Length: 94
Image (cartoon, rainbow, N blue to C red; front, side, top):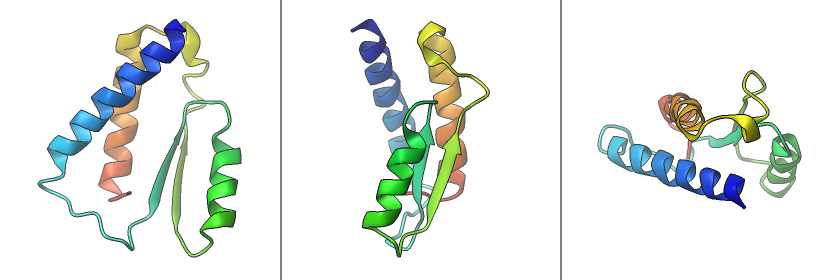
């Protein structure tokens, strides 16, 4: 339960950062779909998205350098997530 709460707060924080950056970048329908994998299940999700939406371009970021996330401090997870979101945003991912 605590791990879910940490992820929820990280996702909320990353969404806030990204919403603040939208003024400078424009996501288009042709933009790639960004997938952030913190270590478990991301390739399965990417494969399912590819099967459902074969015409879409995917940007997959698998953070194997920091897994597992479960033993990391919330501040560390936020920092990793913001850096990865920045990368995806630099690729104008949707």
